[in-house]
Length: 253
Image (tube, rainbow, N blue to C red):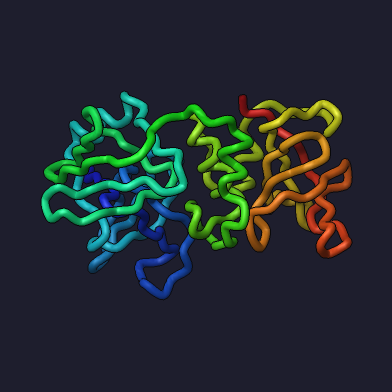
């Protein structure tokens, strides 16, 4: 088995081995993956943090040794939680602007080592923010299918990264996240940080957001925003109608 790790700020995961293929997710700085197969200049991968599969360009990552990959599975990485954290690449004095949720796995003091590359991390690192403040830091982030950063994010990418910054691992898609956690019987029993899931006309889960209280939800739809919620679903004041129909509520913590 071969392994790789992201040494760029963020790289797209494609549905097929082509730059023209849709982005289905992203790999953030310091996240590792197994390589399942190769096709020309592309690697088919499965991510270590959420077991998501897809294709990434060989030009956008470095190989990772087996022992270092094993070490990553045994030691939870430190995470960046600010919107922008700088990583100074010592070899060529270049600077990366890391998205929130980047993994600083091989960190010694403020120096991060990724195989033979060495980065000096500039900025705060930790999990000390309240979950509502982390979530609100994404407000006005544009919706981007497959996105996982402040520069573009989808609904399940939003909840996944917010919870990652608090040390909890969610799966990648809304329908997958709906299988996690403890079921909450009704909105009246909900707490801040609970996840609300929404269904389409066929009853399938297609959307997710995080409750700020029993009347408001923060979610990514067009952009990350706060809307009102009741037992029917999300009501948009802007559109003056219900936009999402409630399926279930789950508690992760």
